[in-house]
Image (cartoon, rainbow, N blue to C red; front, side, top):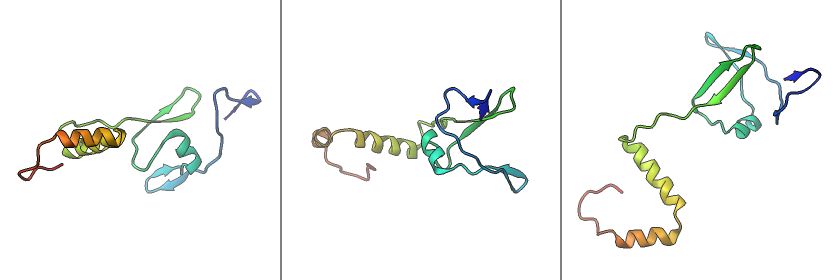
Length: 105
């Protein structure tokens, strides 16, 4: 990633890796430091872009959200609950009616 004898503008980290065969494909292991910098995690979707300079750019892509998926709704509910202050959650819970059936909360 060196260009014209200097470091490319905007670069904040540089490391080396080796391309290895993985089945019928090739793979590169992403070091932990790099994954933390770019916020990659196991299972994250990425897009691969090849520039006219034959450089490979990897970008995380946001997963498509199915707002009808119960798992998504539950995860969103838990995330929002974590973001609320405990006093706000208590006030909301106190205002809710008592459970009388098989409601899933």
